[in-house]
Amino acid sequence: MSDGRLFDDVRDLERKVRTNSAETEWAAGASMKRSAEDELREAIYQILLSRGPLTDEEIARYYYQAGGKLTPQRIRTARAALTHVTPSSLPIVQSAGRNGISATGRSMQKWRAIL
Picture 1 (tube, rainbow, N blue to C red):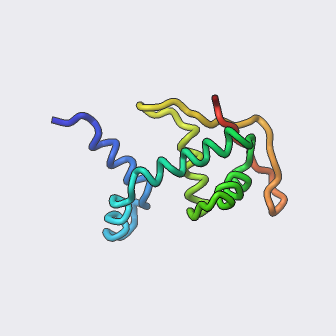
Picture 2: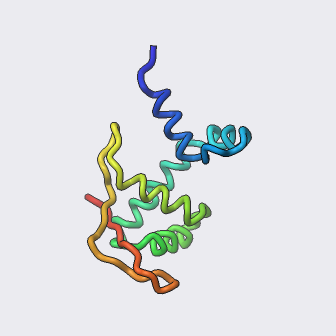
């Protein structure tokens, strides 16, 4: 008797932990609070809604100014998750169709919140 949530939980866990990680990393990934991920996604969405379109670097800068402490990689991963369709949600972030420039001078895609 499965409602499909176990499969979703395993998929979520696989996104948090590399497949070749030690057992302790899998345990740590499983113990991460779902609400922390949701809070990061909500923060990113609110930043884009109020200040967008922005590059990932710009999103991270505003996130840190607001007291955020997660790594740029986690921020990018959370922003990417907001661009995907899932069984339970539609994307709420999309490409703005234009680029910005990174701190190193490279072209970076800008993202915007979908209202």
